[in-house]
Image 1 (cartoon, rainbow, N blue to C red):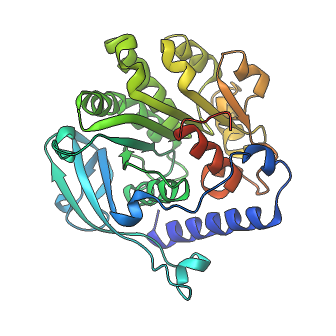
Image 2: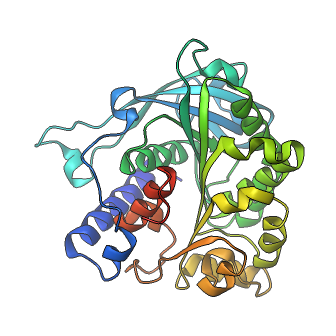
Length: 334
């Protein structure tokens, strides 16, 4: 996906989110009952994103596009230096034309090397992107999400090898599944670090399938000993076979109580995905009652979207973002 297209997409999503908030769409009050505060995310004070990627580096990850769509022989762990958009009243950021930018990639050897061993433990938010994403768009979406929910702690993007092409859905699904051991290794490293508090996960679309598989492996390895290390697990528009997901929920024990599913029965992207999968319902397009039977917290966002696709509500809709913020803050029922 060209950078210009990515910026246009993000500007549109930001504009839709602002318009939704201004118009007060029906149902928003119910979803966003927890209210908002005027604080800012930690990324504002320290514009550094943590990253783990199973993509193959491009030109040594010294310049854009940093990482490509090919699968790497080894996972890269890094700090991503960012430049935030201008925040003055006359800036282009106010109308969605100025964006965060990647300034550099500083690689480290291990997950533990990302943290100061002498510092107090900080919570971590991991964002796992979905279908049709470049490394850069995944980074910027992670930043946008963290900034929007005013996350306090360290934000990390886990980026798997997507072709970033609408016609490469099959490659993307296989690459996401291929990356599940990499994400489990990240979870293992974070859980073992005394510098890390709670680990929160927000996964979108196919990324939810990857996150669920990694959580299943993580729980199989460690059992209830790691349950308290996991904070919120949010699956936004999850592109997962409903039958496969139901089976996996039974395999993650007490972690299931941490899960929030954001679904919309009018998610057109998931309708197409279900058709490609032989008519099997995707979790993100399932009826709320179907998912509630699994003992999960389910948010039906069907009435929140007013676009044609309704697959990026976690970025475009203020009420859905508030749901994520409440879950990560430990008040999922707010």
